[in-house]
Length: 445
Ligand SMILES: [Zn+2]
Ligand SMILES: [Zn+2]
Image (cartoon, rainbow, N blue to C red):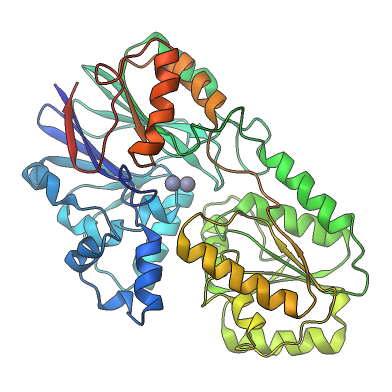
C-alpha cells in the first residue's frame, strides 16, 4: 500500500517536502525553506544562526516534519529535485532526524547542498549520493528511484519517479517543458511517455502557475529579451549592471555572452553568485571563472569599483546580487552607499528576474528602484521567462504520464484549484482521484 503525506509547500509557496510510504518504507522528496519567514525575522534584527531546528519550524521557515514522526525509523532516502532553496535548504536542519537516509541529488544539487552545509558549519550525518539525470538507483530491495531530466530556472532539475510493486509515483516539482534550454539537456518527454504506458499511480505536480493560459516561454525567449536590452540600447558611455537569481546559470551565461559582444570586462559581485558558480563548475556544467572575475568579498568589491570608476565605467559590465532588492545584496548596498560608488545618470540596471510576489520582496524591490531612479539610472525590469509550467504544459504532462491520482503541489489550496479544474476537464474527479491538500495531510492510494 502507498500512503502520501504532504508535509510542506501545500499551504504556502515554499518549504516543499513530501513523504511517500510504500508498505513499511518511506522516501522523502525535497526539504526546502520558506524564505520570506527568514527574511522577515532577519529584517526585525534576528539572526538565523541563533535558531534551532524547532525554532525554525515554529517560525514557519522549514517544514514541520513532526507530522511524520511515527515514520521516522522507516525513511530510506531523501531525494531532491533541484538546488533551489525552497527544495533543499531545510535539509541541513531536518536531515539529522533521518541520519541513516542518504541524500540523493544530481551533481549540481549535491554540490550546492554540500556547500550550504559547509558554510553553515552544520554537522550533518547523512551520506550524499550523486545520481545523474536520466539514471536510476535501487534504494532498497523494493524501491527504485529514477531521475528524469527536466528544464527549470536552474540546471540539472529532475522529475523523480519512485518505482514500486504497486506502480510508480512521479514527483514533478518544479519544471517547465523547454525545448531550447540555454544550459543542459532537453526535458526527457520520451521517458514520460513510456511511463504513461506503465502504471503511474500518483503524480505530485508543480501547480504554481496552473491558472496561466498557454505554455511557459523558453529560456531562449528570455535570452532574446536580454540581448535586445543589452545590445539594442545606447550604452556606449555608461556602466551596465545586471542582476538575476544566483542559481540561474543559463541566464548568467547569456549575460556573459552579450557582455563579451559589447567588449566589456565582466565582473561578478556577491557571495551567492560565487557559491552557485563554484558548484556549477565542480559539477562540470560551465566554466565561468576563466571568462569573468568573480569577487565575493565586500572589501574587494569596493576596491574593484574604485578601479571601474577610474578606468572608465563604459569598459565594464557588473553582474551582482540584488534582484529582489535584498538589504544585504551588493546592488542594494551600492544604491544606498553602504558600498561607496557613484551611479551616474543613464547607467543601466537590468533586472533579469521577476519580483517574488511576497510583501517583503515587493517592498524591498520598490525601495531599491526608487533609490536608483533618484540617481537617474535607466532601469529595465522583467527581462525574464518563468521556470514554472503554465496550464498547457500541465495538460501535456497529464496526457503523457496518465496518472491514476493527481496531487497539485507548490501552491496553497486556492491555487491548487486551477489544476483540479484542468484535471476535471481531462476526466478526473475532485476527492476521488485529484486531491487538494494543505500541509500535514495523509492520503492512502
Ligand atoms: Zn525551483
Ligand atoms: Zn520551487
